[in-house]
View 1: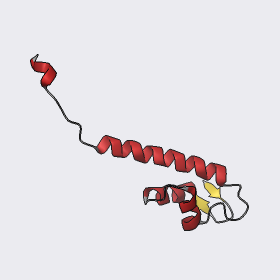
View 2 (view 1 turned 120 degrees about the vertical axis):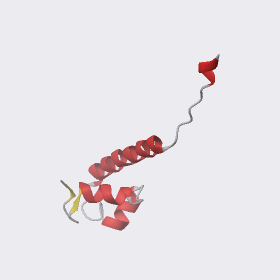
View 3 (view 1 turned 180 degrees about the horizontal axis):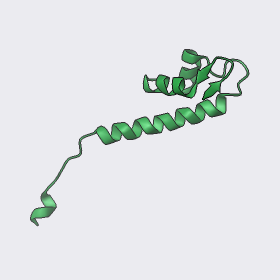
View 4 (view 1 turned 45 degrees about the vertical axis):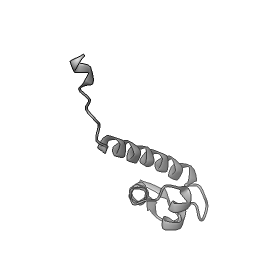
Length: 75
C-alpha cells in the first residue's frame, strides 16, 4: 500500500528502510523523502515506523539466549 503518494513510497519500502537501520522519521525523510512535500503521509509513516521498530525489538529479544538455571529443581 502506498504511504507517500508524492514520492511513491510504499509500506514495504518503509519497512525495508527500517530493517536496514532507519529508526527515526528523520531517517525515513532523508532516505525515502517521506513528508517532504504535502506531509499527509506523516501519521501513517510514523505508525509504520512504530510498528516495525516494535517488531524488530521483539525479534531481537527472542533471539537472545535465555539462561537455563536448574537451581530450583534440586531444592
